[in-house]
Each structure stands twice: as structure tokens, then as C-alpha cells.
Amino acid sequence: MKIEIVEKPDNCKGEIIVPWASSKVKQSEFENNPLPYLFSSPFMYLLTGYVFLKKMIYKGLGLGKPKINTFFFDGLGKNSRKVKEYAASWKALDIVYNHPFPYNKDIGTLLDEFYWNSLNCQSLRNRRKLIKDKLRDLIIERSRGGVVVRVLSLACGSGEVIIELLAELKKSGVVVKTLLIDIDEEAVRKAKELAEKYEVSEWVEGERGDVRKMEDIAKRFSPDIIEMMGFIDYLNQEEAISITTLARSSLKEGGSFLTCNISPNIEMNFLTWVIDWSMVYRKPEQLSDVFEKAGFKEISLFYEPLKIHGIIIGKK
Image (cartoon, rainbow, N blue to C red; front, side, top):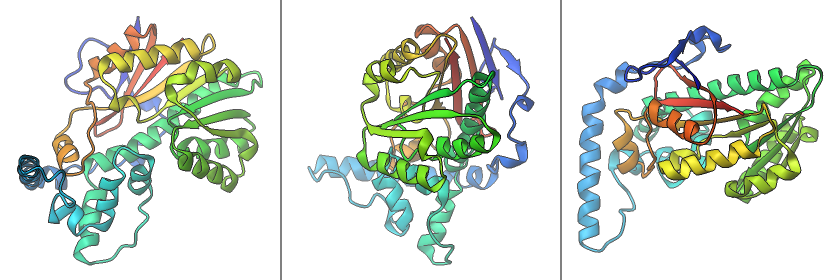
């Protein structure tokens, strides 16, 4: 069993450590500004406690969930409210990735700005850069000898990361055929629009589909690489092992499966209670355990500088 861990979290022991310099993303390109949020964490804890008690009272009175969790997040922050409404979806990620709101100085926008620069949002944008970097490496390695690389993107959302990467690879002469799958028809439409915008439509197919049926999809597409971002964050350990086992069996020999998972962090209760964004938080050893039990023998695990989001790659 070969396990490599890059940017090792402090609580991870016993694995081979590979220098961060193996990444083509420069350290300066990553966001790593934790201090304002470490200092503000007591306020976030107070808000979290307030929302927890509020929800317990609502539940006890049979009132369901509050429409507004707190004045200081989804009350005044219009875009923060959208993140809460779209929690666990590609639409929430679009807000976190792309800042689709003006820089105003009203209190609501200031609250939105504060959340947009929180540790978890910084880490999500770091994850985006790291995924793109690792996918590029996998595709270029697989394309040696002029091979057309086949990438299956599951739970693809808008497909923004892979489509941007395809546009870059197209300029360098690497040919990639990509199949984007998502259960949300609107996400698939958005992905097709982005493919047209980046002039890679001839490389991209998109269709509505269920991740759990990937074996049937793989039989007709025959992927060299499967990438699946932001999915096992919502699965328990048994479910995560099951879906990862499916991914392994769906790959060509020598192919790679790339996915990610969030780690325990100081903002996770804020996400769960204030933003209504519940996830399964895994330590590095729990994440690598998923891939080991799924049958992968060569595993690489990477963490962005804030050590909140991990990217894991298994080679068949």
C-alpha cells in the first residue's frame, strides 16, 4: 500500500510525506488569511449557540425551521441568505467561487464580504485551484503518446473547473473527451453553456444522471479518469466506501479516481447550524481508509494550506 500525503495535517501520522512543491500552483496563489477569523471565532460560536437554541425552541413549539437563522447572517446578508438557501448545491459554490455581487458598503454587503472571506470559503477556493492542478497532472500523464483522455465528471454541478481546464489543455494540444453527469438538469444546462463560452463544446457531453449508476455510464464511456467533487462529504463511511468501490471498478486499468472531503475545523458548527450546511467531516486517516477499503493500492492525499479541504487520488 502506497499512501502519499502532501501538506500533512498535524494530526496525521505514519505516512510518506511529499513536498508541497510537487504542486504547480504557487503558494502565493492560495488564500491563507486565518487571523481575522480566528479572532472572530468567539462571535461565531455565540451566533452558533444562539441559532442552536432558537431551532430547539422552534422544534419544541412545532414551528418547523426558522425562516431566518440570525440577523447577522441570513437576515441582513442577501448573498449569505442565498448560500443558506442553496447549501450543499452547486449554486452555493458558484457564490463562494465567483463573488457575483457588488462591493457596496451597506451592512448587508459587509456581512456577505465577511462570510465570503471566511476560512471555509477561502479553503473552498483553494480546493478549486488544487483540483484543477491535480486533474491537469492526471490528464497530461494519461495523454502521453497522443492518447485521447476520457474524463467522467460525476456530480459535476456547473462543471466550471473541468471546463476551464479543458480550455487550457486545448491550447496545448492535449485532447480530452469529457462526460459531465449531474442529477440536476439545471446544472447540466449551465455546464453546456460554459462549454460553449470556453469553446470546448466538441469535447464535452452533459446529461442528467445518478452517480450511483456510474458503472452503467462507464460501460459506454470507458473513462481513464473519474472525478467527483463535493459528494462523499454527504455520505457516511459505509456509503463512501461503496461509491468509491464503484468508481474503482468503473475505471480502465491504470486509471485514476479523484475526489475530496472536508476536515474537522473551527467553523464546522457554524456551517451546520447557521448556514444549514451539514456534512460528514473526515480526518485524513478516515479519508484514506475509504480508498483502502475500496481496493485502491496507490493513494495520494493532498491538503490546501488551510488544511480544511483534502483532495484524494486513487490509481487502479
